[in-house]
Length: 64
Image 1 (cartoon, rainbow, N blue to C red):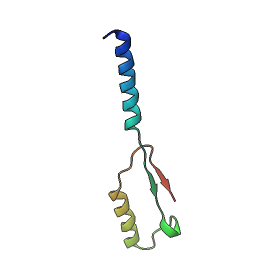
Image 2: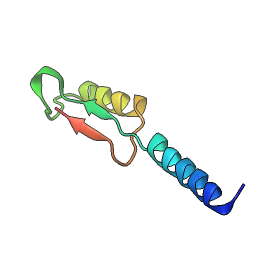
Image 3: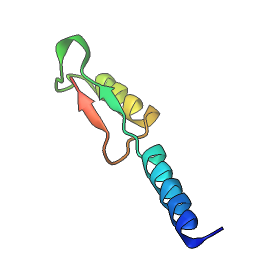
Image 4: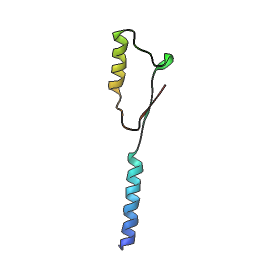
């Protein structure tokens, strides 16, 4: 295989890898009332539980 074919194959593989590994997630938050300050410790625990059930990465967004 000549060097130009090798370069094309490597470029294709690098491009495929870059686009297949980049992803982000949009998380819906707030529910009916939007974002509110918890009035009780129980509601705060619910927020903590929600956050611990989700894995966030750079590039993810939150939508209300």
